[in-house]
Image 1: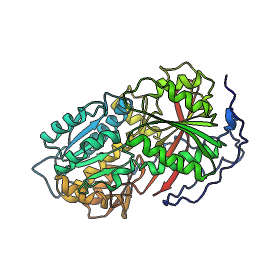
Image 2: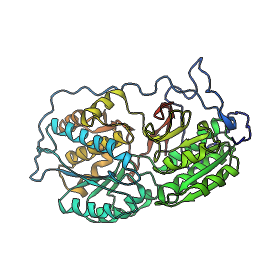
Image 3: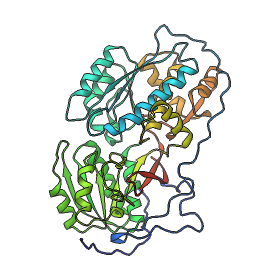
Image 4: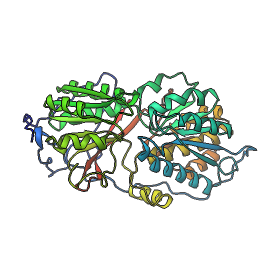
Length: 448
């Protein structure tokens, strides 16, 4: 077993962040609830705040009465495509995202559809950056006349198709892209997302590791737009909080051997290790724990915070933690998703996918058009200033009665910037249990 340096647990020096991220209190008030204690310190002096008592609570949905008919009807039904992963290194994200889309479509159509017609949905696989599946799928979706495409999940994949989609006058709406690069992309105002930029997730994770008492961090990072972008923001936040990044080891998509990266990170003797990967974590985690790294030293991200109950021996990840953008999936929402797909194990980005459907449908109603370019012009408007509502039926009722709406969804508050980014969001922090499944721990809210 490797003996790592013992760093005295401390309260991190949380500094003001120059990019304007305002990390507010955790969902239960910003510190452990009265009478709670910190978790037991692990190797490297890691002692994270205790979980929130309200993690995973049931949400309160807007009451829905009868939905008035649309005063405008369309000869062309709204047709939405999905470009989400059923193969490749992010395939574990596909089921909850697809379930979120299908639940949204089901509820929109149960409320009478958009502009007097049921919404149609066509699903296609996005694959990953090792293949050209996404390009083929996008070509097929555009050929079938979709007005909007929900996806991709991977920022790297989206970069391969964003020009193809937006160049065709179609809305691209990702529920999971987090690369900061999309904020300034020349997309004709047709690219939107419900997941916040990794500027926010990186700040939360970097500060959180410092709050847990880590003074040094090693990082194993996927060398693509997602991995290196998140790496940059985690490092900036951790160092601003007084910590030091002592090792940063990259690997490429398609690599299958990670011993070199693991050995170099362990040699630097960090208090904590951040794994910024996709499903490569299945290979990397056993290498780390096999050489004495404690699971309490491991911090994961949305690309790899997944159910590993069938991959590792019980206890392998107990105490490890991960971050996923978005608020926790609430119990009533989970029940609805399970009715769509009873085999669901993860709920990552299901809320963001559900919200994407609702926002596209509401923007189409507001625009009185199913044309992609017209829908895009209304997406910001339906997300801000107006009567609060949180599902299609209640929101479209307000719209059809001539009221402005402010849609807040299952992923949290949704208010878009002029660039199509969420301007505020929650980042959920999850902790692994003995069965190698993750459970809600606490939430951080931030503004960009």
